[in-house]
Image (tube, rainbow, N blue to C red; front, side):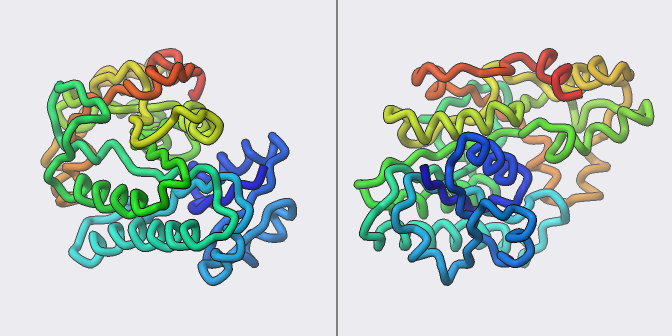
Length: 295
């Protein structure tokens, strides 16, 4: 099976490419620097945007994970514009290449994020819930709208990806250090809901979306048992045999990150109703077991 991935050298995309390659799939990665990766991964094809139209021909699936990191820096107007365009421009280019291809892919999996919903306290968030009204919600709406321009001949699936847990990247990597130093604890109030998910289940759900014909439209790519920040950090501390007692107050985040802090402490009680309707089976549904597995 031929699969094209954007963001295929990133945290999620690189591991997804490994999974597909282990299944014997032929992988093509969209990147600005093919020469940087070609020798390291000789079995994969690497193309730039200029080569995308020809590379699109004959692909079975396209997985779009491209996008600039959200929380590595304070959000100036310039950074916010880059965050938005890093998602919408690539998605638009992919959609154009798909629509113009003579032999189109069967399925287009185009990522979004649970930030679509904004801060909603303890309200249960399913896929039909309306978008929020903050910056991240606006980015997700624009991102998804670009994907929806794909032709109706191609099945579109939009995973709204939650807080991905893995010790070598994402949120969990950042949590590890303070716990190692016996200084771990919740961020913000600790009462906010965290739509966490084990990386294995992210990869598994994307693979599922490619092969399962009934998978269509947006789905919450998050664990079936969302927990509060306090519960999450307790599970991390328990798995690492460390206390979870030192919170990071909201004002400290505000000073360090400015507006970006709101994206970290927003409460999103997102549940994967669509995945459950589609009979998807989670490998790590509970936070305690997931943290033991990861840590």
